[in-house]
Image (tube, rainbow, N blue to C red):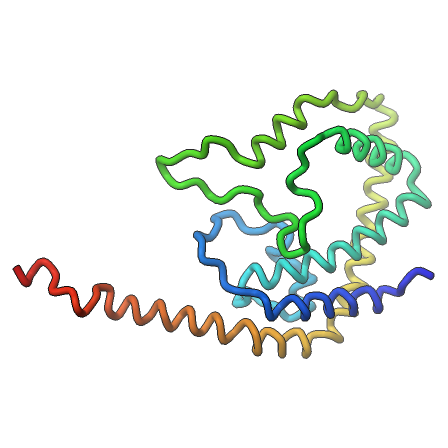
Length: 220
C-alpha cells in the first residue's frame, strides 16, 4: 500500500533528526553560488529553517523532502504522461551506459551538492570529477531528435508534470508545518551550540590575531 504524504514527510523528518546529531560545521571555504535546491525554498520556510541555519543542515532536509515530491511526480508521469515517460526512460538508459557516475548513490546530505571544491586562485586542478563525468557523457551518442509536433506534445506533458509537482509541493509544505517545533528544537540542541562555539573562536582570534607569546617584529 502506498504510504500517505503525511507518513512520508514524517519519516523524512525522522531520518533528518537522526542524522542531525552527526552534523558538524564545514571547515572549508564556502561557495559563492547559492544552492539552487535550498535558496528560497518553500520547503525550508515551512520547516522553519531560515537563512541563519547553516546550509548543510538545510540541505539534508530539503533533499529528503524533494525525493518525496520526485517520487510522486514519477508515479503520476508513469500513469498519465506516456510521451514524457518514454523520454525519461530513454534518458535513463543512456545514463546507464556511462561507467562513471559520481553524482549517483550519494547520501541525502550530499545529493545535489557540487562535486568539486572551489579552485584556489592561481592553482587550477589537474582534473575535476565534474570534468571526468562530462567527458564520459560526451562519448555517448545523444538521443534521436524529436519532430516539432513531438516537441510541442512533450512540452505540454512537461507542463502537466510541473503543475502536479507544484501541487504536491504545497501539500508537503502544509504537512511540514506540523513538524516545525521538533525541527526547531533539534536545531537549538545540536546546531546552535556548534555555531555559537565557532563564532566564539572566531571572535577570540580577531581580538588577538597574534600569539601573545610571540614578541613580534617590534621586539627586535
